[in-house]
Amino acid sequence: MIRLYLDWNILNQMKNGYFSDLYNILKFDNRFIIFYSTAHIDDIFASYSEKKEQQVVINADLQFISDFSKNNCILKTKESAVYFDIISPHKLFENRIESEEIIKNFSIDNLAKSFDNTEFKELAEQAINLLKYIPININLTNALNDSQTSKYLNILFPNLNENPNFGDLINSFMEMVKKMNNDTAYDDLRKIFQNGLNINRDKIFDSKNPFDDLVKLLYPISNNGIDGLQEKINEIRNINVLNWFDTFANTYINLDIAGFQEDKIGKNKNKKQTFKNTMQDAFHSAFASACDIYILNDKRGYRKSIETYKHFNINTKVFKPYEFIEYYNKCLNINNGNQFLNLIITHLKETKPFITPNNNGDGYFRVYPSSFYFFNFFNKIYVIDYKNENDSENKIVILLSKDKPTNGKFTLFKEIKNLIENLNNYFGQDYDSLGSLKFEEFENLDKWQGRYWILDKFSLRLVQINGYFQLYIDIYDEKSQNI
Image (cartoon, rainbow, N blue to C red; front, side):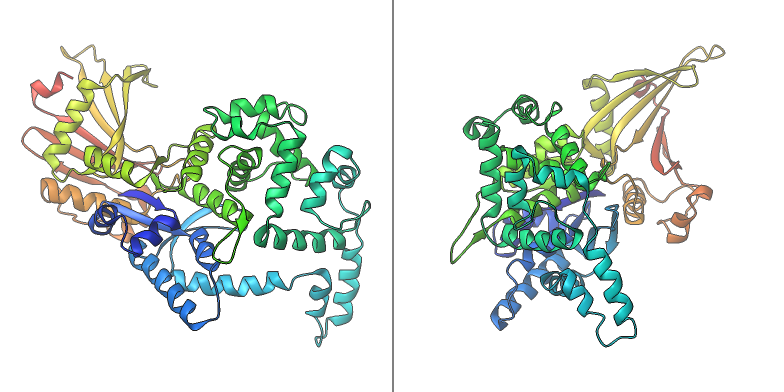
């Protein structure tokens, strides 16, 4: 199966009758596994209201996501490790409402009040008072007193004095979150940042190589461009290294702060565009990097995603809706086993490979990356040329493998189950009549015997090695061997 992720804008428009061609492809083609994430839940939560008519709209939105994704969800742990699960968006939305109440009322003083009427009241008050007056990290204190950085930090941390303690920082941080998410404070910060570094917004906005251009523009505060800027921020926050998810999201946001494809910020009676929108777009892009394909229709988010993927060497393909439909018709809309086999042979003949020696020293690999997903799963071909002094002819083996999504290097039961069912449909029952994949097999892959198909001119062997599923094609036809 091919993992696919769409942003909320497209899902919402499909729900309302737009992008019908895209909807019909994705809804009724079982070669795709479609994921939603907590970023979609936050997008819907932005319109939350206790009014009955709005509750109806929200419930319809959640139900559409549930039906369209079959509840396949991408989440992240507290440590920002990404994982997949089957979970209802309605349940996640309820959790989101509960967490908002906690965030809305959070402060050091309110934390202490939560222990009222308990046997731990006195102990809690003592501990929280000690916590409240702990001096904060010296790097942040110095930054607040530095003429270059203080004007930015005063926006990020409003009403924070020159020698704040931990309690001051928490209260200031919560005030900042409210301003950034509900007002135009983010735009003020962005303008101060760009003006302070003499960044020409009109030039950087449509840059062809924003990361390269920003190396020069950010030199007053970093000699390593966006990455160096993030290192400075980490230093102030007393963090050595961020996890990959937060590093990606922060880099995406820093591109926006510097002016590349910057989002519009403003609010009126009908629409509010704040930092929250940019942050959610960054999260969508990060979650999508665990999938094969990301489809979105926002021009600015599209460009920022492509450039950030390029910067981190992420192999997720990014499409606008019409681009995906063109790609689908050209590369994905194949429904016959012999078509796939012919396509593999054609691809080998028409594509220039990367050549690398075999680790065993008895030949070499020819590696053929591909935009196709052979048998709706594999996207890389290896041709292994063995040298054997005892044979008059060299033996050639074709091996299909998959370049897993950069941030989703795990395989799901559903993906392999679907692959085996497809191969059985294309080529008949496997040789040992094992049939579809059973979950017990998937739980014990170390002992998995795979699947085997024997046909007139070739045989197929599906195996698993170190978590990677591979399909060997042994060709008996002499004409096909000459590739």
